[in-house]
Image 1 (spheres, rainbow, N blue to C red):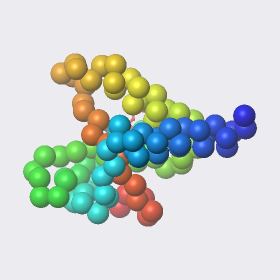
Image 2 (tube, rainbow, N blue to C red):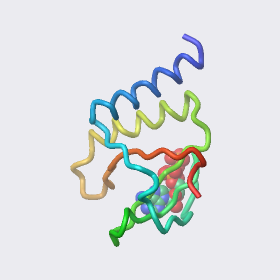
Image 3 (cartoon, rainbow, N blue to C red):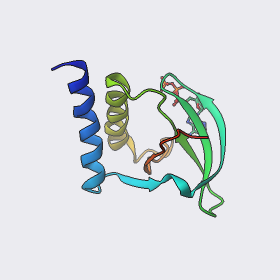
Image 4 (tube, rainbow, N blue to C red):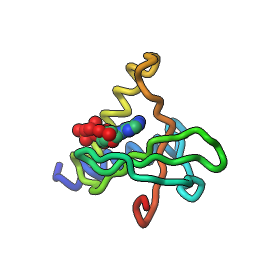
Length: 103
Ligand SMILES: Nc1ncnc2c1ncn2[C@@H]1O[C@H](COP(=O)(O)OP(=O)(O)OP(=O)(O)O)[C@@H](O)[C@H]1O
């Protein structure tokens, strides 16, 4: 399998999980008060609110959707499933998409 085939395989994995409703997809337009709070190896991290909720969320963005990034995202979701019960582990709520990136 080529580099691109692998990328497509993981992208398909994520898209299928969303269409089967194993992962929730959130409409990006409902995130408000978006402020940059950090950056990691894969992209920037933002703080945001969902609609008029006062609860802050972390939005993790991916600057480059290549094979390593998408595989890493799937790996994080798998780890999350293993340890989600622990009180020190933050919850994963779902995925959002934006054509213009997060701004
Ligand atoms: N849930 C969160 N709440 C507050 N800040 C966060 C949260 N998640 C990430 N950050 C901030 O964003 C930075 C980058 O986070 P991110 O998880 O992308 O990268 P990392 O864990 O530092 O490294 P890697 O890119 O290798 O995963 C963190 O160091 C932290 O400052």
